[in-house]
Length: 461
Ligand SMILES: [Zn+2]
Image (cartoon, rainbow, N blue to C red; front, side, top):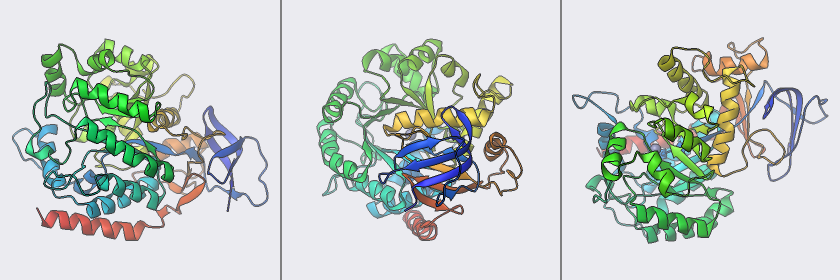
């Protein structure tokens, strides 16, 4: 089995390096990353610049099946909330076999699009009537199997969901498949832990949002998680919508991020997903807490959420990463493009994402998003350095958009000028090639199973 790769150019945590030899062990962990190396006999040679694999820090896999189906006007003024009504209707019919087929295709797509791991924010737990499956972990295990089948790194985040609004409002009919007591969630975590450990996956917890989890339940669930794993990741949807912010203020007198920082042990384990609407004090305090801001630029644009103030977060040293969330777009490079373009439009400036250390926007954004995404995933996937998993993407130097360019410009062209045709040649996860010549080995069969599952869900509409 190949355990070395030679690259003329590679993006290391400190920046671009020449003639890099990557070596890893049987466990797929990088043992040495050597710059200015000579190609060694037997080492595979990369067909273009090597960049670190992107962790996808936020996914609701089943939503992939209705991507593109909500792009028509259904109400006088469509919003996140009218989209959510459609999503609930779709979720109501989903079975374990649909879930596995959709996720298998989605995860293969992710690999082909430059993601090497995914955090699954898994909130559909029960059967269509809202009753627990005979095996209560059925839907979570379907996702874990899908990840293993295609070979993507995995962080499973079962979602705690109890109320339909701030102040303990009872859940509505559309939410019956999501609801769990805190005790039942802790039992689920106990069941899932050995399965995740055996699969090399990380298990964490996702309190859905402050509107769905009352304060006592939040406290008890986190204490239970800590008893199982003191450093497990904790993800929460926090301030996606202005209505959510207004409702939180009406309930508590505080905005969601401020409330969370005052009432929960927020630190580097936490990922604040859609921390879109924060005031200046929340940007400063949130960034300094060590939590990762979970940005989902294409979904946030698709849903009309609003624009995250990226320079404010970075000014305070905030960590961040990207997720494809609703999967209207599944493409690591496009999330970076959308993030940068939202900032340009809002601030009427260019190259907002460049940094003092990295003038090339695509280079700066890639390195930061990999670092933050790894932290949010709770896995050693933070880039091309010894001790990290050998998760990397080989760009296709033969692509027209990239031909004849220097490596930093190749990455810029991949992000900004590849015209949505993938400029990816190969994707490796834990030292194993999962995408070769742009294709995952299961591409065809997974696509067919996905289309069949989607057709079935639509027929039952
Ligand atoms: Zn989400």
